[in-house]
Image (cartoon, rainbow, N blue to C red):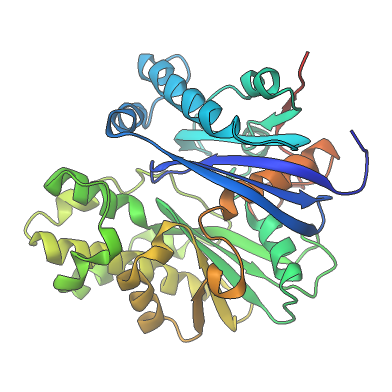
Length: 365
């Protein structure tokens, strides 16, 4: 494998929304993005999703995690075997538990399996090194967001907003020399996003999500509830900071007195209100926010963002990027950086006390 120059890297991501496995290829040297390659998606079945839900909050050695790992590894094997031409794989796995100030972080799935299966150097366990030295271990996409801002030719501060199970945002100064430089980035979780809404749909209606925001569009937002929720002290904490998917697991129960439509509308607006609140932490205002993750497909959530935040808000497709695959691409990008002993996180993205190059490397026999 070349020690410098651009590589075709394959990345795979299974997010906290528990929808399925995204996989995508990019050509990168770990600094710039030169080309976007093929991508693929493998959804989890209802049965597989139930196994993963049962394992949330559990740690290695717990009986629930073995079944979850089998689901994750089988699904990844199916989708990754479709690709050819990759020179390295970045395998994220499925986050089951995340307690950076406690027991650590747990992404299930053994990356060494894929080194042998695909015959590729495989970088995995991206978060543990960051957590071990005192970082939050999340978010990890910001260094890739910086490369994308440069790829887009940005010259003013902007932000990438990922609305997955949890929301996270990356503030970027694209004029900085690189993502490692102080002041180039500020990244942190904004609060709950799709996770409580998806949980509401599952608990009340047996559905995985509010497709196209159809249920929320028929409801009314309980603004008093949002105001009370945003007074939680977590929102005033200075970033970097991160949340576990189930950090506010009581949200659905707290809306028991609302109708299905009003509860869906309130949780949809809550994701946007958390992002609006996050603006108080930005070093400087942004001219635009580019939205990725499943939330960008919810027109009601986008409408709430635009209603609450005074800047241009666009799904990333509007600037030529693939919002379905951006997280998978990020782990392809980070895999190249790990191979080349470059930083993948640092003080302004995860709160780690120093720059960190996270990730184990497994090589084929």
